[in-house]
Length: 280
Image (cartoon, rainbow, N blue to C red; front, side):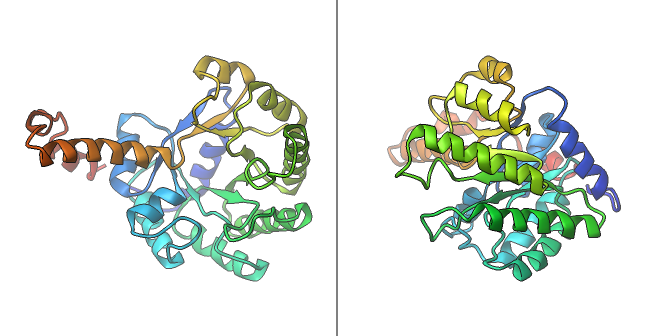
């Protein structure tokens, strides 16, 4: 369980995990049991997915989950594990910097060590301007510093999903421009979500000079190639809950047709295993 007054140390650990020359793989969880399971099998950190947290609580993604509910969920996850937790906070549930600063304080008080922070709003099809987003990142780091917390900021850019009028080359150029600016503002990692091209990974890493996080999607390079490119972090995003639901759906459909009994009775996960997880 979480020990008091070690949150800053966890922030440092999270930073080091992005600078040790190893590929950090983070399945994104949505509740504390999944978090303790990952810690139990050896993951050095835990990450959440905004879509998984929202869907599992009956809400659509895009900051539809009430902010207080998010805080409560994060608090439970943090207190269930000893490893650092980095939270997907979307755009910070804030359209202005005053609200953003207040929300960051509340988020840090849950015990998290890092965040994913997006450069667009779900209800808009355009990116937040570079200057505005840099102000937000700078503010986040300032608030965290004043609280004595080295909060790890994974700056997500939606340049590949909200610029349909741009060419691939233009999207790459914009990603590099944003990455450099975000780094200057204090970001610790760049997350060009949905990017798949190996050469583009290499170019971004070389030009921006930040650890790069990518999403596990069909068509991305394999593990060895990712290591060769220098990609630092591989996230599953909402794919992890989809994988879980796929397995649940599969056995449920079999049972509906009076099949699949053995898949339930021969499941290797026991009640004792689950009880041991919640004691960590």
